Image (cartoon, rainbow, N blue to C red; front, side, top):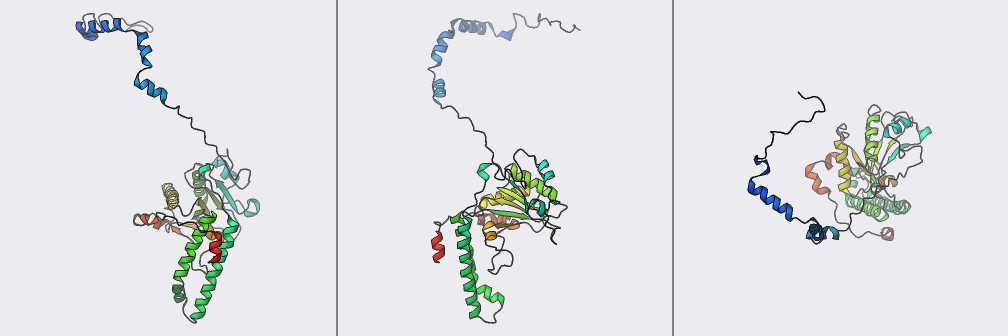
Length: 319
């Protein structure tokens, strides 16, 4: 055994007679090529080769600009801040014990990636025109009830079916024309499940895996304080592909299966018009249901239809 640092001799490992270097003819050929090769001539011609010319002609690949993160809630005490870990955020604003009198009605987190941020739209214009649509429906309903005295509520509802469907479409088109398009998937976890659910959703939003923002209700001391509302916002309720994408991500995170009845999606347009469950217009407060959206037989029906030319506010006021 040689000591450390000793060189291993190559003697007798490869002899001059070995075929390691090739046969005699091959060795002669290689020696001739070596003697004939002119490195200066090669590099002088190198620039005329097709691959070299093509490589020089290619425009330089522009550097990928770094993503500039932006937090619309920056500086707000009730919201997550850039540079703040989700662990620190949930410790600073624990969802179970934060009270409405100390924090406000919501604890919020926004998606910091600009392409996923929401624009609120012209809410004032939407509300004005939307309330006019609701007023006209109430007039129609009163007229139908007057023309059918003593009729059951179900009978009146059936007679108003086409008017109700028209109202739903008109609100949708009005939301499009004014840019009031945001909406949200809703969770109502128990206080026991709230911290984990909120932490995972907050992480999903800040990591650009979910929608535009999320919020959780604080403790208002009311009788329903045993469960809290969490909203996961999306940019456009008419973009069913994006609404479904976010739902499927929530499923992958294991957050939907805990709700045996599924979860529901409501557009903010209905919230601005105070359209809630059991409203006088007979409109369903939620426009999507997770079980229906995830049903393979229903997915084909969710593709957005080609949009009609956006109606103007004047057109809505004239109807």
